[in-house]
Amino acid sequence: MNTCSSTSASSSAAIVYDAAERRYEYLEHTADIKVHAWGPTLELAFCAAAIGMIGCITEVELIKIDPAEEGKQITAAGHDLPSLLYSFLDEILFLFHSEFFLTRKLALGTVEKTNSSSFTLAAELYGEHFDIQRHPRGIEVKAITFNSMSIREQQDGVHVEFVVDI
Picture (cartoon, rainbow, N blue to C red):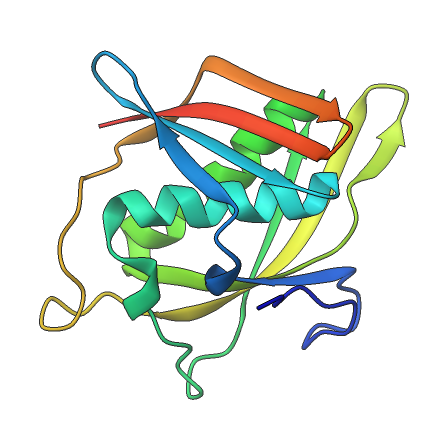
């Protein structure tokens, strides 16, 4: 089932990604969790990375989109693509830590190069607030790290890897 789309709930969104797409996996790491995510574009790989991170916290299949909850707007910026990925994931993790908001679906604009060495990305996040009765507790993600972070373009698309501190 392909849940990616070029039409979206956000008028400036280039893509929409739902957790059902599941383009991520967890890799072996000595003390923390390493996430590998992929997609045909950089933006889809970033979306898959975000859902992979949320999957550490709870089972993403159980997250619903609350129709009463407006989309959460975030903007990320970085001096290069790894710092943009870090900023993007950190914004989503901050929403969980500050509002207990679980992201299931993302409407994402395109990565924009603002000058010779800066990148920005805007997104609208959809989901619901954590409910202990419905969302099993996974692992507490304390922070995103630059440890083993990589973004690679390959023949089959873009692959990102990063480690979350638990």
